[in-house]
Length: 213
Image (cartoon, rainbow, N blue to C red; front, side):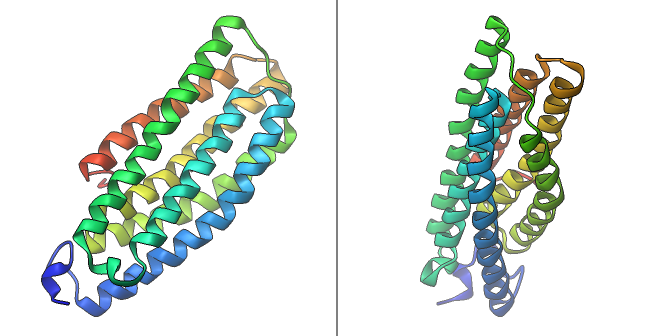
């Protein structure tokens, strides 16, 4: 296949492009493994504690996991050099952002209006701390690879990983505030932050300019 099939011809050599594509694929496998555990723990802990933010965090993990599957698909076989596969993957990653935002926003607003209070969740707090340590590394690595090979889909998946780190921080503030100070409204407020950032990242990924900064 000719070099012209690459997303940005001439930016990297064919060999370097394929090597970086393999790295992106393996990073996505690693993300999928971690987020499968993260999502399961978050959803169960969120249901037990009636925490909207924690359940939303778990659903976000599932959505991110699907994004990882998309990137593995994108860089498998002949699709690694296919601009059509890149555009399809980019759109799929963006749609996952759009799937998350409305659900989390609805649940958060409902919790704020009804005054529903989440119980303290130390499991959730531990999960948020762990994600703060893991996700920035994956997100930054994917953003760099995506920029090198001109893959908005890979940058978008990296954006989801960095979003997960930001949301881990918001989640941690909400859960600690509720557990230590009894500030129940911090939990749905953190969930609203999750929804807003997810929507913004979805728009940027769809346009192909997510995570350029």
